[in-house]
Length: 407
Image (tube, rainbow, N blue to C red; front, side):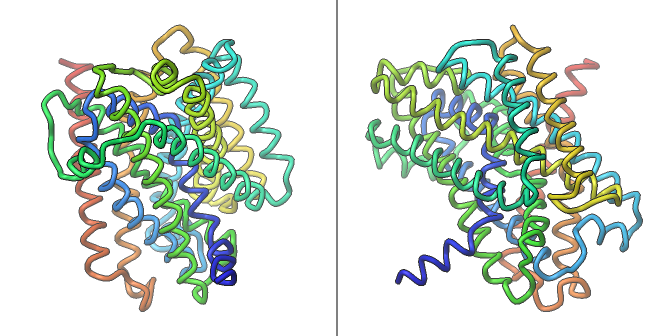
């Protein structure tokens, strides 16, 4: 029994990094706001996004284990450097947008606990993150340990609040039945999907599997790791939504952001609830803070053909640039409503990901590339469902932006 548990922990790493970097302040804010207004009725969407995210993370993990080249280097060799450059630049822009939200999320959580401006905390944690980036020679190993610690922090914090809240099992079960209640905001749904189902986050799994040196002989471990990591991501997301639904929606209290939810929890569940939630929010913000920048730096470097490893100096330099851009966004947007900025950033970035999702799906199904490791039909069914969802939301988001700025 102990040997099985030890083997499970040895096979966990990349998936937890993906879970930690995907579950950022945008996710916590979007899910909290949705749960406080609609209750458990969109719980099915959280689970569906988890299924899509797990599917693409597994596709990516299998690619990383089976193919020797990194994903964008493979695309460059197969279709030309232009394609890898486009995807690399898109990833950089997406991560820069996310980083603004991550900085704001760190500032929101620290402000709720200690006071001080959002911009001040954003700059302070950017300096700390840059130090972390360049201090460790083996950045992957340090990143893996930090992200696992922060995932545990989030689970303890958010599940602790849920236990105190005592949710209604019948309400939770009804939330698993797909519905589209009146008053549902499309931009809110897009924000949840784009933060819970991150294609670039899933793609990064291929790089992390290769960084951990898991080859074809460890394909099973890479798949198990993906399942455990994304299951943890989905669990935490569901717990946040159910907590908001149980404590706030039943009392008619709507919140605009995660920090607002923490404040509302205090008079209802006690002072410890606020501290627990803020601790979880900080864990979500800081884990995504570092992981998101490393993702963007590694994939852009690979797209340009000048890197491709997490520990490459060029990847670190680009990651540091993403962190600085995020801190600048947080400082320049002080005085504005932080959650509106976060949700807008998450909604806009979904436009950039359909191409990446399609290429990951396409290459994973090429037998000349994957050999006998091509996905089964039911995996492809989920993958197509995820791709169609992303394309539809991207189209609607783009249409909304055109109407907003032209109409």
